[in-house]
Length: 173
Image 1 (cartoon, rainbow, N blue to C red):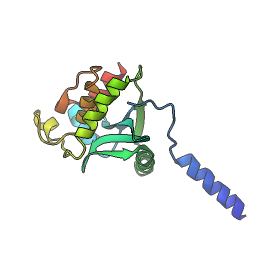
Image 2 (tube, helix red, strand yellow):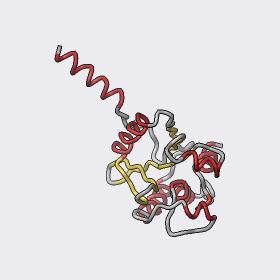
Image 3 (cartoon, helix red, strand yellow):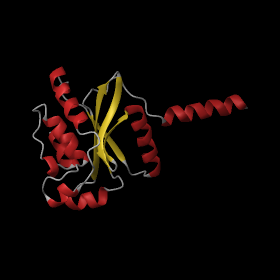
């Protein structure tokens, strides 16, 4: 009986735990739709796409970089994905999309992105620039990720005006 319970428990844990895929390319952007702030964001953008983060590899580890309440930060990807699963359990309507680059980033492009990403760690989080339509001290998620990718020349970021849906369109169209 204990073996059956343990087997079912392990099956459930494995089923519900996200596993990092080696096929997830460096520079993959993670988009969230129908999250906690999606309604107020939808009023300004017409979309429920509400958050973005980006995957980069450093120090032999996979990291998720994002601007979120608390400031610009990086989190181990495995921890980030575990939090994502918990968010989905709490908010069942939450959808997660992974947008991988059509063409892998070059070493030079990645170096530029990482330099930008790390130079902003600790910067305050703020939606204010987006709402008042001007640069402010803080930055929001799509501002951070959009400006990071723009370091490669692949997109032109709208900086503080960049929204999750506008960034999504730039990367998928």
